Length: 111
Length: 113
Image (tube, rainbow over all chains, first blue to last red):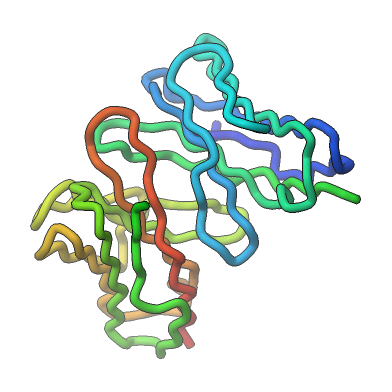
């Protein structure tokens, strides 16, 4: 079992729709979770972080965390073509704010 | 804003060469990281440093070494480059406290011929 599992996609959604990106993790000790967006050929940039069970909203983005199910998700409302990218899920592991990265889900927002 | 600067955006080297990749951050972060990213494999941690002169092996340290002589600078060294080290290399930094994210540099695309 991989430490962090994401559906590689591509996930295609029409412009204006809600995109739902999912992630499961194996380390029950993980306490912090980060979502990064990565455009092709670019480096990852932070989108959202979440530490507590439940939902956290920031603009068009909502992160959801369920520690009991070891599941974290990212919802993108009113999807735009500029949201087309690969989204990386990264639970914190151990000390020093080390992260374990999933291989990412490719999102395509179609006009 | 946090600024993490990697010395080269693209680099081409030959098999057997000693290669240095440099990373500098301007936020006085204690923790710095080197990753490589390959298609289908995601980001994999090569080495981690939690303070000056302190280092810890990551998940794939073989063939690499690191140097952290100053807090702001973290160098990745390929002692004798091989073709299987052709990859995108990413440097990141963060503080150790709380739930802090890592901030990434722009990456170095390294080709070993």
